[in-house]
Amino acid sequence: MTLSQFLRDYLYIPLGGNRHGRILRYVNLMLTMALGGLCMVPPGRLSSGACCTAPISASTTPGTILDRRSRRASRRRLILQRSS
Image (cartoon, one colour):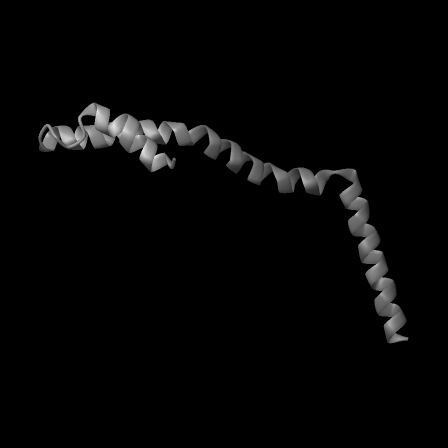
């Protein structure tokens, strides 16, 4: 079951759907979208927070700083060996 099917079957249709006039149809639609949006806010915030903090935490761990320095040094050695 998709989110749109759930919203249609369990929110929009029980509210009356589009059977009670034009104004109530739009009220029901707005309520359905608002309630559906509330369901999506917490997972969206969690995933966006994880996407933002993962690069920061990965770049500040001590191992990665040493790894970067050792990679740079090995690249320099390789370049010096090739040029001589």
